[in-house]
Length: 285
Image 1 (cartoon, rainbow, N blue to C red):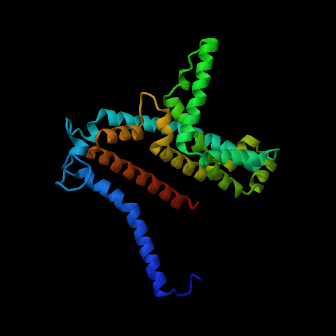
Image 2 (cartoon, rainbow, N blue to C red; image 1 turned 90 degrees about the vertical axis):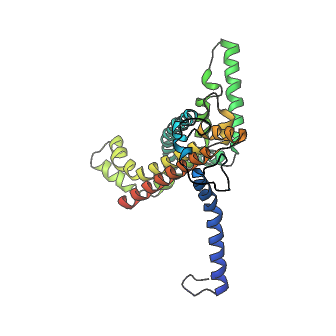
Image 3 (cartoon, one colour; image 1 turned 45 degrees about the vertical axis):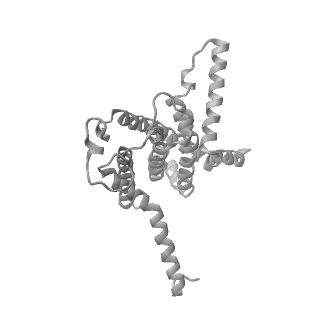
């Protein structure tokens, strides 16, 4: 149907019901989690027992709040540290991949492009187990053959960073490649004709054009790393990131402090999204 033509009442009603049901399915669980972060009860679910800020500010058991829960705060720091490294590696390698796939012709390019996308269709658990098995075999071989202790190949944060990087870099590559594909290469040729070096052209012409996609890729990489669970669970060592710690606490018996953490993450994600939208409005790209 042409969008400008009037639609039958039944179609309008069906569309409204579908959109409403989708929004309810999407946002009501988040709203419930946010509300019950302030519930004056020892459980994170209904019924409502009154309002309290204990799950944020309480200093002692049994109601240690988020702001004074050393284990939770440490796990947030671990997740942020991992996410920063994953973001840096994904943006740098994703940018290089984008240039390789968009600017160069070589035998097997299409095969390489397909292989680059493979991590997106591999379940995170399988990816984590595969990386752990390979890293463990290499570490065991190095120990048996040469007596080398390659601790970074044992379960721990280096493997967590590697596991998350393996698939997040694919998303960064796609994001940056899409922008690079639309770049007008005559701008680079003009700069070269005016005497600029290739390094200067890259720094002053090409990378500024790619900056919005690089910022967007960095934001996505950070958020995806911070919330990752499946791959991380397979590779984590003695320092659990936030998602793994929350899972462990859920198994032991959930408390509203987990709702408080979830609310904090929702607000942080919303803030990052708003900052990106504001930046896009200012730049017009």
